[in-house]
Image (cartoon, rainbow, N blue to C red; front, side, top):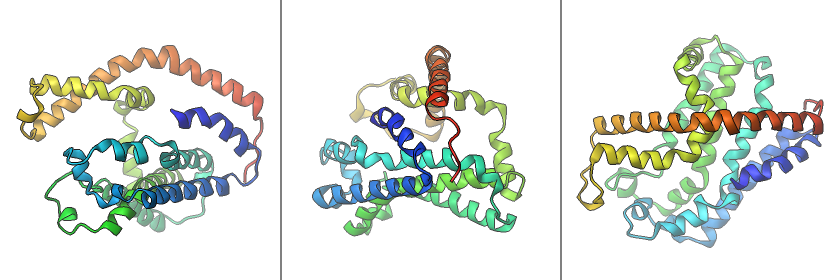
Length: 265
């Protein structure tokens, strides 16, 4: 939420420069440096296997406070989202051949998927069997930024070559009307999904004694996901139409009045 409070001032500053992309890249680099400095100042966050926080062997609050709840440690991915907004309108004019674009897309998509495995959430994972503090530090510092940059490449390459190879089928799969409500409600769903996850799992497991709950099956996880999605949609619809949509329109009017005719880089 602090990122969104800072956003208007950041946008005004960016609109006053002719080197928007350069400044955005510098902000991403700054966020990485900040995360690195936090780990240097608090080595316990990378010398401790992440699974120890999840298992309450160590208090997870120390990790959350330093690297999850801290705006300076988290704004890099937010800035990469601004990079997407800045580059997307011109991506379809990029001079890149289809073969190269497809290869880069597979690389970006594969990298994004790979980052989802770090840090590992499985106690007996190979990552912990050969646990290396230096590698863990690098993972903690870079994995969010690498994931966000990979996703940026995925969406921009689809925009650049929408009818080429694998990117065509990716675009078509996400163009199905089924996804539209979820895309429209993404922000309220992001803000309020957690309590509905708890409700969904309570309905599926029917047990509040955490220590007695066995590892859930894949079927149970799918049912919980469906229940969560339906509850989030039900709750988010009025928020979207009564608050978010009018707010977006109001914000656009303010933006057009304050920042007209921004020249391209």
